[in-house]
Image 1 (tube, rainbow, N blue to C red):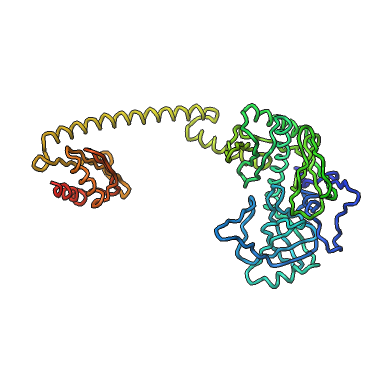
Image 2 (image 1 turned 60 degrees about the vertical axis):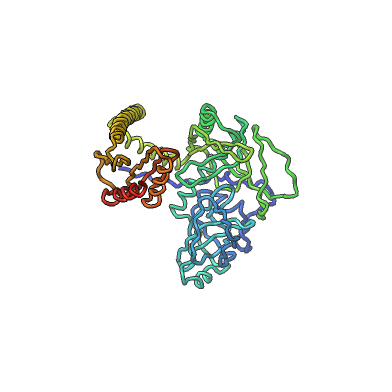
Length: 471
C-alpha cells in the first residue's frame, strides 16, 4: 500500500509585489528592523519560522490607566500576566502584530542557548513589531542576557499558533471579499467589522438591515468567485504622506482609506483580490480565496446608536465554518436521537412537542382555576358560618397535598380579607414586621408572600398571636 505525503502550503512568488523601484527590505546586518507592512509574515503568510536577529530589548512597563478607567483590550489578545515581560524588537518576524482589525499572533522565540520563550502577543509601535515575551519568575537577568541586541534567535509559530493565524487569515480575507460585494452589488459600505474569538461568527456592520433575499444573493456571488479560485496578492510601495491621493473607485467601491496616524513604517500596503477588490490593509491574507466558502447567517442584528441605526451581518468561512457545521450537525443528531426520529423530521417533531406542552399547560391552568373556585367557595361558606374565634375572626391554613415537601425557597401565600379596612391594614403591618411577609393591600384586602418553611407550631401560632392582639 502506497504512502502519500502532502506538502505544506506554499505562497506563490507573485503574492508579494514591490511596486516602488526604491523600496528595499533592510538586510540583517544594518541593525534596522523590517517595518510593519513588509514583515516576513506579510510577505509569506504560510511561513512558520524564521532565523533573525534581536534589534532591541527592554523590560515592559504596564501603561498607566486613570483611576476608574478600563483599558480597551484588543480582540482575542491574551491577557498579560503579572510576571516580568520583555518587549523585544527583532529584525524580522513571522509573528503578526495586531493591526488592521486582525488580532495578534501568538508564538515562540528560541534563543541561542536552546531555550524557548513564549510570545504572548505582538503589537505595532510606530513602524516596529514589538514581541511581548514572557519571563519566568527569577529569570529576568538571564532573559536580558540572551536577548542582547545582535543575538541570533528563531521566531516561530507552533501548531496552535499557526491554526490561530490560519483562522484569522481565513476570516480576514473573507471580510475583504464580503465588504467588496456588499458595496459594489448593494451599495452598502462597511462601517466596521469585528474578527471575534473563535468559534463565534465574525460580523460586518452596514448602514441598514438586509433582507434574506439580499443575504442569499451576496452569499451566492461570493461563493461563485470562491469556486473560480480568484487569486490574492499584495502590493507595497514607499509611503508618501504629503501626497494627497485622489479618491479611487474600483468596480463601484471606493478605496484608499488612510493609514493610522501613528504609523511610521514608511510602507503603503494594498491587498488585491483579482478583479474584485483593492484595499489598503496590513493584515495577513491567504494567496487565494479558493476553498474559502462563505456562509452568511440569514439575518442581521439592528444596532441603534443615538440618531443612527446600523445592522450587523454575521459570516463564517474556513476552519471556523467547518467547526460551526460540525457543532450544528452534532446538535441536530443529538436532538433527533432524543425525539426518536430522523434529522429531517426534527422541526416537525419539535413543533408537535411544543403544541402538546401548550395543551398540557392550558389543561393544568383550567384545572387549577376550577380548583381555586371550589376552594374559595368553601372558604367563603366557612367564614360566613363564623367558625373562627368567637365568630369575629376566621383563620384557616390550606396546605398543598400534591407537594408536601417544603424548602427554604418554598412560598406561602397570605391573604387578609375583612369588613374593617383599618384592621386589615393593621394585621398586614404586623405580618410584615413580625413574620417577614412581603406584600401590601388597599381597602378591605391585603395579600403577601412568605418565603421559607411554614410550620403550624411556629408561623401558625404567630399568626394566631397577631390576630388575638387585633381583637
